[in-house]
Amino acid sequence: MDERSSKLILVPILAVLFVMIGYQYICPAGSNSCHFKSEERLRGVSLLSSPYQDADDFYRDSDLDDDGPPKLPSKFNFTERDLDRHVEFNIKGDDVIVFLHIQKTGGTTFGRHLVRNIRLEQPCDCKPGQKKCTCHRPGKEESWLFSRFSTGWSCGLHADWTELTNCVPVVMDKKEAQRNKRNFYYITMLRDPVSRYLSEWKHVQRGATWKTALHMCDGRSPTQDELPTCYSGDDWSGVTLKEFMNCQSNLANNRQVRMLADLSLVGCYNMSSMNESQRNHILLSSAMSNLKNMAFYGLTEFQRKTQYLFERTFSLRFISAFTQINSTRAANVDLSEAVRRRIEELNFLDVQLYEYAKDLFLQRFQYTRQREHQEVRLKRREERRWLREQRDQGRPWPSKHKGSGKGDGDVFEKETENDLPTTTEDYTSQVARW
Picture 1 (cartoon, helix red, strand yellow):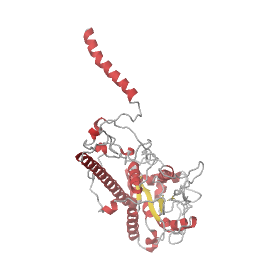
Picture 2 (cartoon, one colour):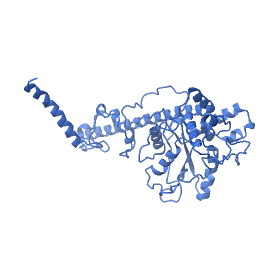
Picture 3 (tube, helix red, strand yellow):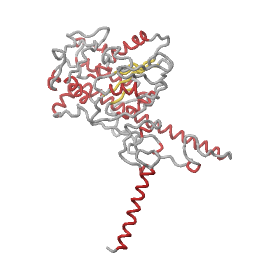
Picture 4 (cartoon, one colour):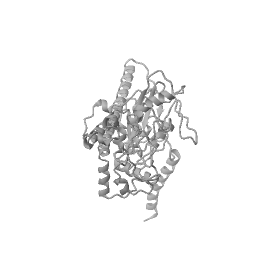
């Protein structure tokens, strides 16, 4: 190769290097000053720990098609009323959010989000070293949140639906004298039953017992005969998975259904009040109904969608995005297919509830996204109509129309999906460590 050819090859290489070096100065890493069209947008950029820039910055991902039909048809006939869960939550008035915390569903992390991560006029007061935060309404000595990290275990350790619905109004009236009737909005988190069961086993294996839980139902706690313990001694430390599965009175079995159902419908913990098949049918139906009628519930496997739906339900915004972590103690358990089937059999009610909950959750997400897209399109259509009227009347156009952030020549630019907020997809194979 002669000297002339070498120079001809070297020139474009140097030009590319010059452009790349210049770009690093103009658009350094982490800068928001450089924008790309959708086809040029960088892939794999994580927004999980980014603070809010605007209300929808957490939901930017052009790879997710939220407007399309569900990939699988729904097995359940949900109505529009079932899907539309927006509530007029009045934090300055008489409304209270009640968090039903089911063990090993990510409730500890979600509970911390509620007291530390919501953008509020008067944020919760969380002092270092203290387990509880003070979450008062703006200008009032009244709590707007009933949860482990705000009011503590006021209705008992990990109180269930039966306990909370009977206890919360009484407890709050004792703590805060109030003339007006409160509106209680119940929320909870659910998790894949096999992962949740394994997580509880590992937790008990390390010494957890929850033996101080009250299990109140119809005014009393269950007797030892109604609810026998699975172990002797102070705890069940070191229990093997086989031993854990072999205890018939293990409260880990179908825990999510039991904690969401109205236990008074089946005689509480008295197993002799009806046959097992009838009892199971009533428990599952009650749990499904109560879950559907709650103001909100999230799924551990869908952290970002959980955040999105909570924000749209209550018109509240989180400061930092939820994080999806997929390496867990449950995920690290090496299960044979036979053991997995055994766990599913022990939790057959939870498996059915979770299938129902996941279907409803994803349909609510899609319904909310589609409605939000429609509202954005309608708003922009009205903006263009207003601008046309200004032009037809001979009035001068503003250099920047409010909310558009564009010059005159861009006002009628065709809207694209990039103009609409999108959401980062979650991973459903595993769940986060809590």
